Length: 248
Image (cartoon, rainbow, N blue to C red; front, side, top):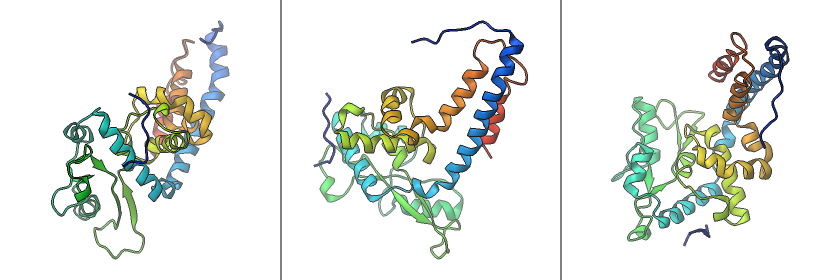
């Protein structure tokens, strides 16, 4: 029934250098990385509209969840614990809970589930289904510029399929969604998923993937300041400076 077809059941040489000379050579590099972090953070804020999922992306993720449910990797109850929020009950829905949260300031947003008549008796019944909501900051329905919220990235982050589990076309779509998980939501990629998709992300979608991922840049800053050169003090603090820029 789903659109997804599941098929699965050199170290760097070191060079000796004095602390002072190494510091001099590293400072421009690290400052450049910090600048990149500032630029990337500003760009991400401008790309909010690009994070809004298309109908194609929503359908893809919903179908992926159905196929993932068939693997038995996680039960519906285990998924609820993983998402750390309730499933929507009765007449409630993701959209309704988002609007209520915007109006009351109480964050109790639930997630939609596969609970339609056609889902009864299926393996994926009760599993999360992508929600999307257009809402006003004050909880009303008549503001001029409504915002959009969706849990598509949080839900897709649960699916642990690898590139080999998709067709080539499906894998490209999956990679693009994975690349947007951290940039468009509060969800974090696990180390396993980074390792599983890292090469495919960089080779298939280039700058949309991990090459421009904020956390990757921050890791680069950290690696440079901890590169075994015994550099301390001002240089080592640049990582925290970059973090401060990220939060602005």
